[in-house]
Length: 455
Ligand SMILES: *Cc1c(COP(=O)(O)O)cnc(C)c1O
Image 1: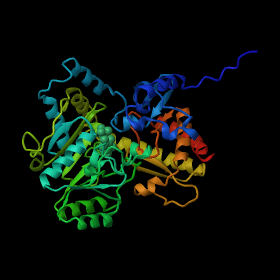
Image 2: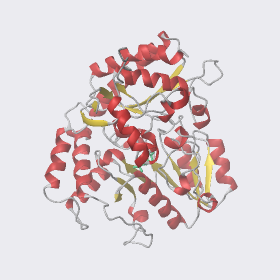
Image 3: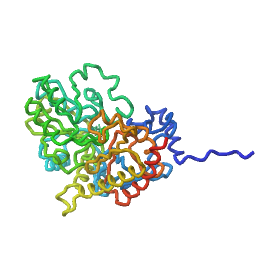
Image 4: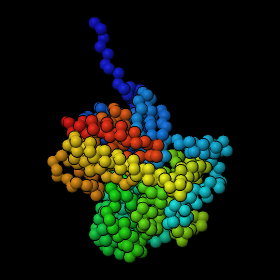
């Protein structure tokens, strides 16, 4: 009798590698956000993560030779797409001259100047290696300067995996059901106070209950780590006023939004002055980087200018600086006559938003498509109509139909569109995406929305 072969999976090589990966690394991944666990379908048996072999522009290719239009974009850094030629050239030029010196380089000054010119609230900066290090260090600085301990943080905002900030955190922590992690002693979080995002009355009350004790409020000016949730009108202005009134520092975590929503970040877009700004992602152009900065009166408290200690073997790494300088040079509004990259990104984002909305309506799937510029999330609302029509905070986001998102995700993956494997993440558009890419994505979404609603 002829042996019937199981049809070969289009992800066969990835499946084989993933089986090995889970033996070598927890969950088979180097960061939980990359896991497909939350979108794997009933019993989790559906699919594992695909393994990527190369990328160019807006496209990814996996080891089974499937190609994808990429909206993960490494979770934000790749605003000009994968390996844009000027970034590739800058990194190649630097590697010929060495990868790290443990000494000062002119490149650090260049990147610092570019950032200071784009963000007038960041005239002085310290480079670190990740967004997590940036927020961790900014918190230390805020506490050291104010000589107060309490930090206000919003439910659902993600500021990296810093002990004191990993409570009710978004991103992978929410996707994998650990918004607050074991392994963090109460002593590390006892000075963290949580307030809902977009809720000024609750924040006002939190300040009033702790007069003279709050060092800082840290916030994502546009929440991107529960999916995209913009600030309500007046919210950020209100936070600025509260911090002024209570002599607390306002820390904007712009690791995601910096150079993403505008050249000057969310603080430029909304004209708000934070005391400290955390950066990462785009300023490293795809290489590991982070930074925190503010006025010299604050930053000069950092060692060796001041007593607040913070250091790093690879901080200001020449390769990362080269990639960052090359990337930001592509973005500078003033550098390109008339046609800003942000105008292009806004047009592409708007096209995707409108197309997805129409596709969802046609398939009769209730979604709230939320977008600021080139970051976008379709929130899959509950079909029983019990949910508010838009998502304005963490509690709203948690009510979403994550299984509908999972079905949508799988349908899009099979059609060649790479989305973040979680309802609680932003999709990112780059300047390498074309109108053709967006239209193709919308075409596939028509089918995927149908798949999302069928159970
Ligand atoms: C990604 C992110 C971080 C953490 O950055 P890492 O480089 O992953 O440590 C912090 N804050 C926000 C808002 C982020 O999006």
